[in-house]
Length: 456
Image (tube, helix red, strand yellow):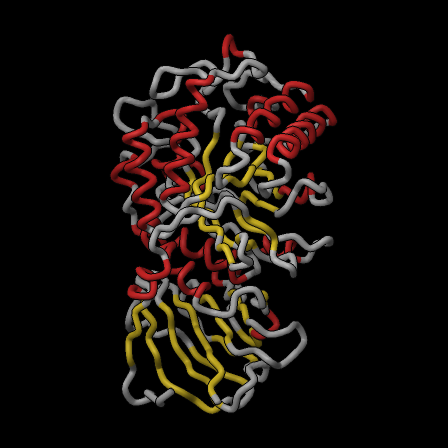
């Protein structure tokens, strides 16, 4: 490679993106990588879990509306759609867009075929678009009402039967099971219901699909179920407040034994009121990017994005939940939604299954948590055989890095723009074992990713 130190160049990932993100049928089966850190498809290729949040998809959208939504998310490079069969907004008593309820007379042992055929069609459409359904069998208020509509309809017996019904129905479709649904596990009854549902799903799908658990705010699935054999990977919900330190959640799960992949399944949503209070302002694209890069560079196997209008599929005429700013259709193209693909493209362009969180390589940096610089490399832990080091700067700051772990006499230094996916190459420097620098804030003043590549 040539030294472009005196001729900075801009390398766009857009062409690469178009080639790599073209829709192909979603993998029918996913697995855990041999090192226990990442997701892979049936051919052993890395699967980057990049989800959008569509809790009310099956409940509020008809087939035409759902196709519009799913097509756009596939175009934007998402790989997973997190969605709920028994919806949060009174999903057992308020019909879906076709006028159907999920159960006959509210009895979970009597599923309504028309309701689930609608879900079938949408999941099949996801598969055709290259999307996997991150499928919640139920929102949590159906087993722990708390602040929701409920009613609580599940016992261990009915939960097992319902799980078996779903497992059999979706055995050959691209699905990741997500139990839970924004509720704490508070007693033995709750645990028995969830365990029975997981066992029913396993019986029904024959172990075909991965399974995780979506907890309530500021909680982690590992707190309840890390040692459960059915839990394939961990999920956190770090919640909807600015500066939530989701990198700490990921670091805790990454360090647990036995080793399991982990991710943030509900960070702050774009256009969500900060801390649930409109007077605090709304979370924006920078908040969405920061959560995503913090999590993935801290060891997550992917990330979930959310938009406040989209998760609830709000549109004029519907009761708004916590002050959405636009309709769901308008919100599909918010900046953060269009920028998530750049994270996926960046991660897929580098060594994947050998990547580790590597905070020890940051030798000097800002102390404030909201300025946390997350560092990742592809070295063997403790070794000096890295080919790539990346660091996410959420704000302008000067930092120093231990570059002795990069196995080369020279380094290519570049800055990746998480807003556009463009890389600004600043050239090749000698690898002296340490490097101090700051992002190119003259180009834009917010977040950047430092990309150091070993050069012979």
